[in-house]
Image 1 (cartoon, rainbow, N blue to C red):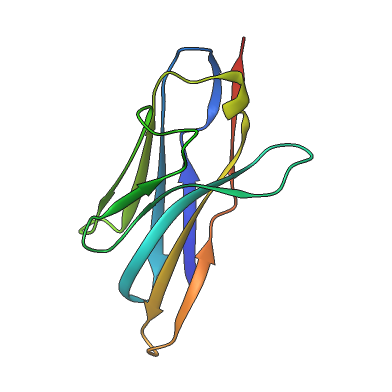
Image 2 (image 1 turned 180 degrees about the vertical axis):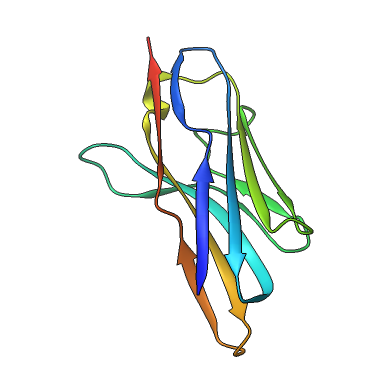
Length: 120
């Protein structure tokens, strides 16, 4: 079994910062690409940022220059540093990862989500 557990969400004023983390645990052999997604009320889930196993990153236009994704492969942990937060960043944030487990099966796993609320 694989689990992704997010932490770090909360309530912050516009212009503030938050740092999300996502720890993967279980019978993991290898973690490939990882990413952060978000879903605001009444909207579809959208990609926020992604990071390849080698460290290459990609960002949604709406967060470029404000958010930074990183990973610690030794700790199987993904991070999202969010600066200059705006009310429109309010959403449930999910982490996802492409993982190979001990039975050599590859699959995509999702965390349970963490709420980020930015007040104006």
